[in-house]
Length: 119
Image (tube, rainbow, N blue to C red; front, side, top):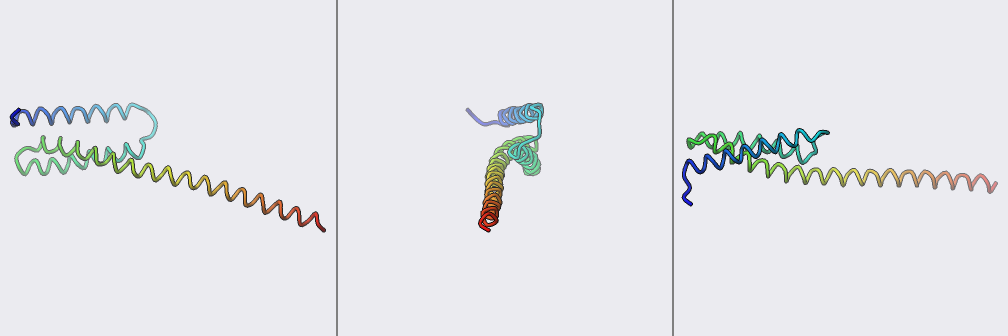
């Protein structure tokens, strides 16, 4: 298949429509956005803006915005996923620290009670 301006514009329009539908579906899901979703949104907007600027320099701003938005969406989602994974790991470590502090305090109280009972 030969790549023509018409084919490129049709493909970029389809990609842009898919991105809009994805964003609308994610927005209707309810609840707060996850870090992954925030990253995807920021990446899509940034990619579309950069792609639009680059595309306008070569005479195809819509195609540039659609391609940049799609690439930005993917990159933003990957980065957001990594950050979300790190946030979860930090949350689990904080839980473990709290459990350890509770156990340490309980042991300290047991030792203190045993010392008092010796006298």
